Amino acid sequence: MSRASTSTNTARCAVCDEVETRESPFVAVMTETRGRHAWLHAGACHERYREEVAVTMRELAKGKVAG
Image (cartoon, rainbow, N blue to C red; front, top):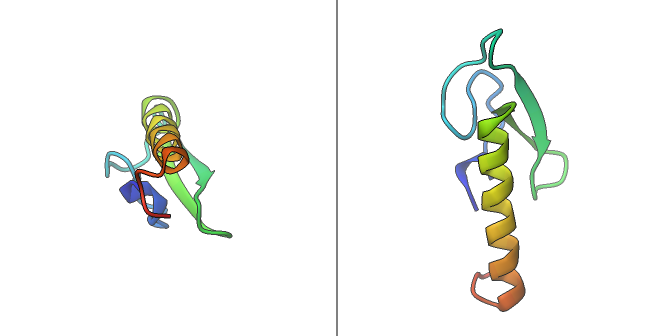
């Protein structure tokens, strides 16, 4: 999965690796690892992460990615 799936760094966005700002706040997003969250900028980074997860889930459903 994406880098965000394994990141727990609260200082940098798991998608773009930039810091949180007042204009780009972070949101905690659940990952496939129970009890772990990825920290992402709200907006574009969050949408990119969601799309990556959706693609991976579709591939898993088709048997293209090892689970």
